Amino acid sequence: MTLHDGKHVHGIHVVHDGPREAPPLVLIHGSGASGSSWDPVIPALADRYHVIRIDLPGHGQSPPAPSYDVSEQAARLAEALDELGVRPVTVAGHSSGGYIATALAERRPDLVGSLALISSGPSPDALLPQPALLRALLDPPLGPLLWRVRSDAMLRRGVTAVCRRPVDVPNALVADVRGISYRTFRTVLRDNTAYIAERSVPERLTALDVPVLVVFGAADPRWDPSSAHHYDTVPHARVEQLPDVGHFPMLEAPQATGELLLRFAATGR
Image (cartoon, rainbow, N blue to C red; front, side, top):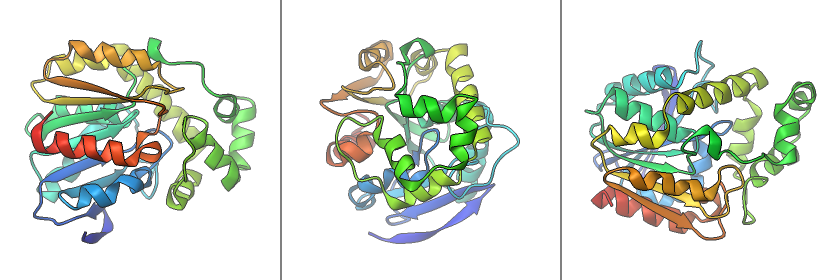
């Protein structure tokens, strides 16, 4: 595996793993995370693909942006991919990263050859009551106060609160999450909800002529696992559920998740 240094492209921090001449695979993290959330699956993916991990604006090593509108974030990502000169790409998004991936395909079908959505809730009504720790961190008036005093242990618990299996949270992810501001996180969550409230993800995907892989943890505590089957109506879509896995398949079941992504990137199924 060849590791390339990260750099900023159109205000987005980009890290390259694997050989540049290999087919491109773009990985997009979810809200309140960073490209480091993909760490456990990178070794397997980078053996065969030019893996491009991004930090969305206001996350990880990417600076804040004036807007966190999903379509505008997709437009910035398209500019970065244009500058990198990669196309067509397989794009995989975790959680709300799946919305950015979908919006990218909507705006620039010439860039996206296939889409993989991992733990991406299809619509607002699929959202489950959130774990108590996350509610405390997010909801005013306590949220802004707790946000300022978050310890590394609290950040790790925030990740594991939506996992079913025990996981080792990457140190880089903890460091990246610490840098996200309360205001940015709240704004991102609001804009993500607006995107799927306007039109559900299955509706959006149905309008696209692109192969789709949907992966859900069968024990996801954030999104109703049964809502994965809302994607059954999407043409060219394959839905996979991982048993005894929560919201972070890349951390909880990296081997199974990596194998699904490798097969999909190679075959579109």
